[in-house]
Length: 451
Ligand SMILES: Cc1ncc(COP(=O)(O)O)c(C=O)c1O
Image 1 (cartoon, protein in one colour):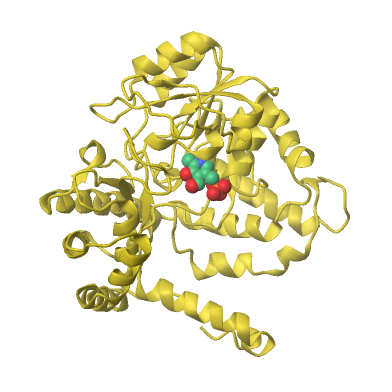
Image 2 (image 1 turned 135 degrees about the vertical axis):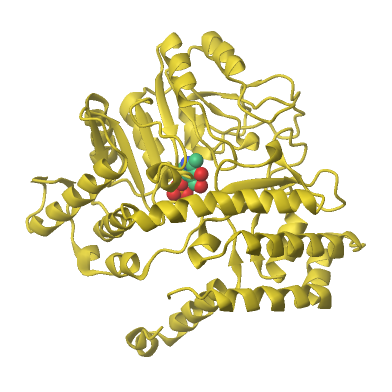
């Protein structure tokens, strides 16, 4: 990394950037929503495209000087159309700023305030932007798969819409499509949403379409997490089945931070107006440039291999963790992510995630199906393989990672800490955890990132 101009212009910020580069280079980033984009993507994002205002859509702008921006946006749209095999009656919007904003645009375009929406229960893996609210300190009966939310409307989507959520089956921890259908028939939603942040299995989009049709609902498939796997044909695609598909562009798709909406043309007319002028002003053209480059990269044969390897690695990691005595939610994964159920361990997700970070493995604590603990101190740990696969790690490395996770788990299970602060201090100073960190760093150095 040179960045000499930044270094002399703003040494303070440069130092923070330097430290972040070292962190990314020397630790294994295993948060499933993160990835490491290419130098080409980052050059596009850091380009002069950021200087241009272009409210409106190609050839229908409110400002002059958009001849190049029009080409840029049309190129991104063309690439998304090809990559996701769009039917001829579907359209693309690349302007929305991020995944939550994309979902909001769909709601603003297709719904009225107070309409009923039906998404997946957040602790089972659903996303905040699918209508999350809760009742503090209330206990959940996990056998009742319909969740009506509570007074704490933490997301705009539960404040503006009547949000009813479906849970996963308490035994299998998988979608119970018959239960989803029953709830839909009862509450008659205007929109049904699938997708989530922590659901490790593929979703039966055709079955969900049938349910939506039975109750006359729109069907939104949010594939924020698996977009790259869908683009590569490694996971099934909801395009042409759902009415609308949204996704972030920075997770498995490995472009830059942003989002894309795909929808039937007649719906997209309304969604386009919801994006602009409904929710945003000028699009972030540098982001659209990064997305366009990322889409181009995802159209190359190597990306297919990469996406396959993401899933091979996640499945290998899951199998190795099971050998190490961990309980994996739903027994494995079809995708890039897995959840370790820690309910039978003496530590929870928050402790394990912190100790692993000191060991050089970056993960996140997560809720899981039948969660009995609050989101700030949940029972599970979420892991993903997109970034480490970008580094070039393969199945044999998953064995090492599972072993390190197991070692760190054994180390912290001997702690007697009074509270999290005390735990944190012990983990930070622990010589055995430091030994793991040295081994992790050695592996990272064998697979350097192109910064
Ligand atoms: C399923 C799903 N939808 C939407 C989002 C929101 O994306 P963003 O963080 O870009 O707003 C996420 C992010 O993790 C997600 O997992």
